[in-house]
Image 1 (tube, rainbow, N blue to C red):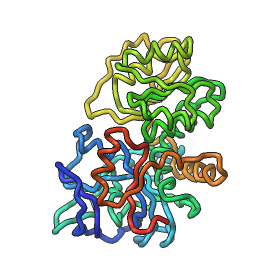
Image 2: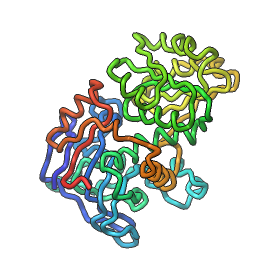
Image 3: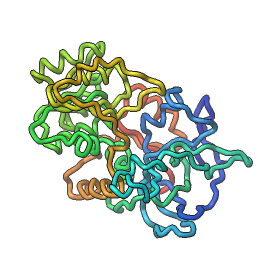
Image 4: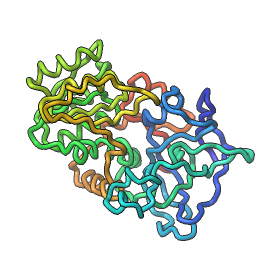
Amino acid sequence: MRALVWDGTGLHVDSTIEVRPPGPGEVAVDITMAGLCHSDVSPMEGRIPQPTPAILGHEAVGVVSAAGPGADVPVGQRVVLTVLRRCGECRHCREGRPTLCPASGRPVASPFRRDGDVVHQFVRIGAFAERIVVAQEQVIAMPAEIPAPVAAMLGCATITAFGAVEDRARLRAGESVLVTGAGGIGLNAVLAARAAGAERIVVVDRNPAKERIARMCGATDFLIPDDPSQIAPGVRALVPGGVDAAFECAGHTGLLDAAIKSLGGGGRVVVLGLPPTGATLGLEVRDLFHDKSLLGCRMGSVDPHRKLPDLAERVLRGELDLNPLVSAVVPLEGAARLVDDLRNGRIDRGFLRFGSTS
């Protein structure tokens, strides 16, 4: 089969990849569309460790083509993927918090091979391939009426942002918001803040071309700082006293520090962006006085089997429009250009097309 392989120096379309059949509790999924997330670029930039060769990708939609023993997902079911491979038995799973499940981040044996050698599976998915094998807990049914790029985005950028805003920060109507980074997750956070009834939504990005889409999503203000040290004074000039909630979506510790300094009393910062491995924060602890909070957030801190169907219904009802964020859809051969466009801020969310896009 064909897949997009990262060999440590570049991305290559490889038609010699083999994938094993699904084992007990697993399903095979034929991918129709996969989104390019900044997390997929991070291994290429050395920001997170990743053995090579590897098939990257984790934000995807496809169709179940085979089920292993004990798997009860119907063949032919359209599904969205999730990186969470939960056990379903620990106290966190029983409480509906699978992002805390010890099994959800454990390495698993890759189903991919090339000439008998292992090709690694990025974050237990490896979605940049025509067919993948995952645990049945990693697939969630998706209505056929939702366009493929939107369906794929729901599984990562959208659920992460909406979970962060609605469930982790518990944003309330009338509150003020700061979003740092107007990429796919940041723009979804703006949409979520608007849906929650935020009164003021300040977006920060160094790319002036992002202002149009940010305002389309609901931003009331847009700042283009030359340096992160300018952010907090700029925010406080717009929102005297500081914002109620800030969402750091770029994985930049300087932006995270600025977000903390932009908080008002009782404010909370939620960390969504993926910083480089080993990154540290020089936090002045007194910045958190007056009931301020610094909150981690993995995949929106939600149960995707509950949150994703809700988001899908909101799309179908017309309450949530993600189509403006779909910047480009290209075949596998266009992946290198898509990566370059993402790195240089020319797209909001780009997608790789595999065969049918139903």
